[in-house]
Image (cartoon, rainbow, N blue to C red; front, side, top):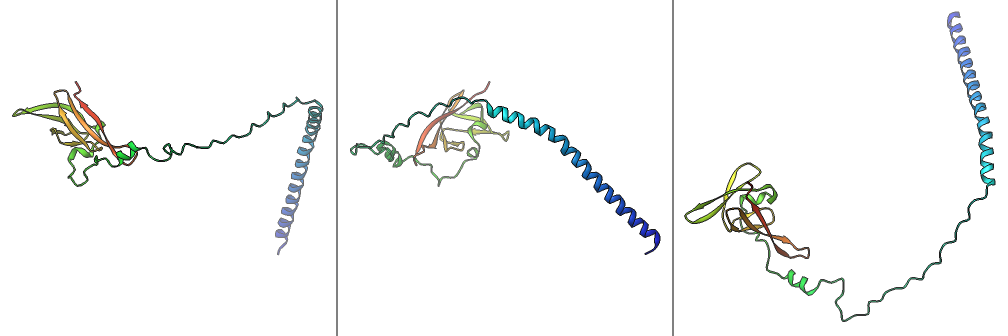
Amino acid sequence: MNYSSCIQVSLRRYLLSHWQVGLIIASLMLLNGCSSDMDELKQQVTQIKANAGEKIEPLPPLQPYESFKYDDMNERSPFTPSSSAKSNLASSLRPNSSRPREFLEQFSLDTLQMVGTLQIEGKNYGLIQAKDGLVHRVQTGNHIGQADGRIAAITNTRISIVELVPDGLGGYIERPAALTLKE
């Protein structure tokens, strides 16, 4: 190692040690500045502790729990379906899963719009526009919508539909729906 490299190493050590000393002095000065705030904080805490707090009201007495016993063994249990619900389970209303699906059954009713009617050889037909923009001709008995809807009647301003929807108890119920002519 030559003389100039020794001087450089010594200079680095000198600067590092002075830099560390400067950092320590700055930290001590900051901590000293906080000590006066700590004294004020301690005085404020002792003053707050010296003030008497408000009196806390006692808790109200606990009421004993009264249980309920279901004594009416002759009555229907509230946890089993009623006889009318059981009869709905045995209801013959079911969607026919073996019939072929018609084209308009892929659309929900709210996306279909009645745009007119036709009468050919005394038979009424409805004109329905789907969201794909095409107009489709339907007649009584056609299926439409995603809830197994069947067209029940067609008038000049309305297509009446009967849908089969789940009743929530394992069966199905008929629900009326309609598409009306928009002017």
